[in-house]
Image (cartoon, rainbow, N blue to C red; front, top):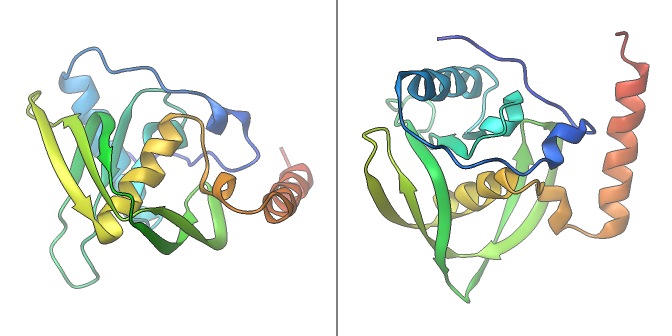
Length: 171
């Protein structure tokens, strides 16, 4: 497994819409394993392939807390097929927007259809942190960032800050 470099705001790659995965093969599963390794190293609880520069509809999640055994989950071509009307608010962060957090309101419960590592179609009903995490990562696959769910003023300030930092970074 290989730890991949993370794509950081304001990189325009983060705004790309990811292409569907055509087949589950050894190469794709190796990519999923690399993503998990990258996510654990960061550390984070979710990672979309686009965050390491791969525009494919693939994401990984692990909500295990410190001291618990890892519980990696792989979602290939995930799609939200149902969402509740009841809202939920979580303070979100993102590996591609380091050290910035904001409260985001999303549906409290979602049902996500996806293909698993086994190549078979699955459906999961998620609530709580898993629902938030899946919505956040699926947004990435659609070129949407969590800062798109906050006020325009706050979003513009964050983008300006990261753009300035990127320009100051030596190439």
